[in-house]
Amino acid sequence: MITRTASRTLAAVVTAVAALTVLPGCAVSRGQSSIGEYVDDVAITSAIKARYIEAKSVDATSVKVETLNGEVMLSGFAKSSDERSSAESIARQVKGVKTVRNEIVVRS
Image 1 (cartoon, one colour):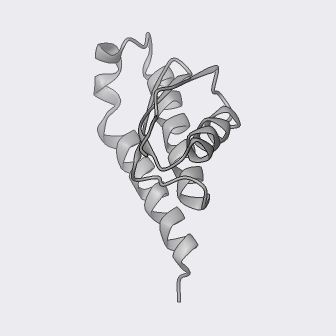
Image 2 (cartoon, helix red, strand yellow):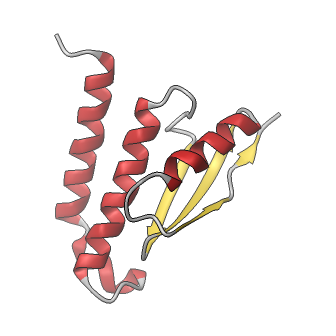
Image 3 (cartoon, one colour):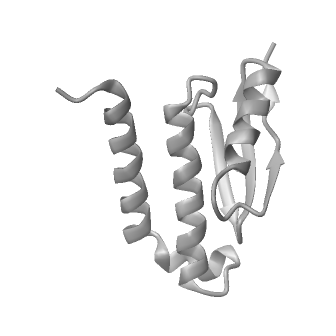
């Protein structure tokens, strides 16, 4: 029997693989100079989302992650300022992240 955490991690990996195989043609339109940079950005986004799924402190479905040339932008909604801060902290710890712009809004 697959545990809930393993199931979520598997879902994140499957999503990442699908993105890596389907989306590389979009690299030039997103501003990267190579497909390799685009793949790196997709890997960063996927790693952040996977960590959100594993973390109990962040609702992965409420936070949008976008990465361009290693610069991450977080948007969406958090239930508290602690969740907002945790989302940023988790994103900063992912390999390849250069900067994080946190635009998450705390809903009261």
